[in-house]
Length: 377
Image (cartoon, rainbow, N blue to C red; front, side, top):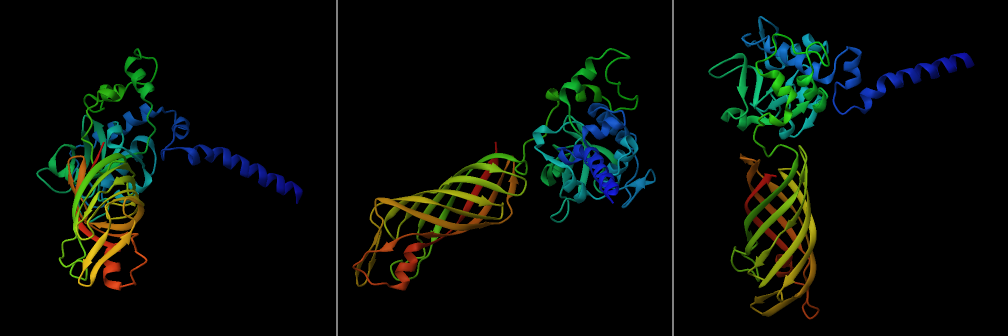
């Protein structure tokens, strides 16, 4: 029994040592795994691109994975299989989930590019070859089958979802590959490598990059403007409540973002100017925000029964709320969206006034609708 126990420990230890590199790697296919195949990261990328180029001209066929026809994910799947003997996920969405997300500005030859051409999920994938170009199997358009396209083309700009990395990138080794003398250093690319590939691999800084897009992770800034509502009741006779603006800066990931927002607001009904500084968190469609707000002026309503005052003038209160928006319209490196928000303002009635639901509720709740534009830095 004791001997079996120690045997099990050794098996677990060996399994951990074998798998450790994969567990802690930042890309799905890690450098140690390539080493077992006698490949450096640069050689692996060159082989992948050479295999991909060998399929140029193969017709498009949904579900196809051979030279009789390939769909987009089948083309990428077969390229990895033939070049590196790796079996990767089979569908575009699965590849997108599997690959390491990278900013578009970090794209290097051999990385993957993803698109949302139909619906809301990733539905198209290609392999980046440098200079803003990618190779893929197109199902529609003036040319179909395995072709080379450019990320600057309007359709691909409009549908671009993001970039992914499956193979490690070693910039120093890639540059050395170009400088290595014949017969020494890293192996030279195969004869059927794409035209200009060695320069693109060996000089990553000189590769033309596609334009920055809102979907790319990174820092952002933005602004917005909105009308405020909450009228028609006692103390707020008209629907117009005031105007508000937003100046934002923060960081976004693929699906979420966090930001610091300055949110000035003129409340025409209460006769005050608010200057909130809020922390926001959420997605492109939904955010929550909260923070302190300084009140310029003495808040109050002029009611039929006399003036109704609220505490908090010329001092600090707080504001919290939720914001919802339509999916942004992608314009350059940013997104323009129509949004609406509900904000709760922490006014308290003066002690001499009894509680009255309609004016006291209207004083604290603000409804705004407007436009905002956020763009990637």
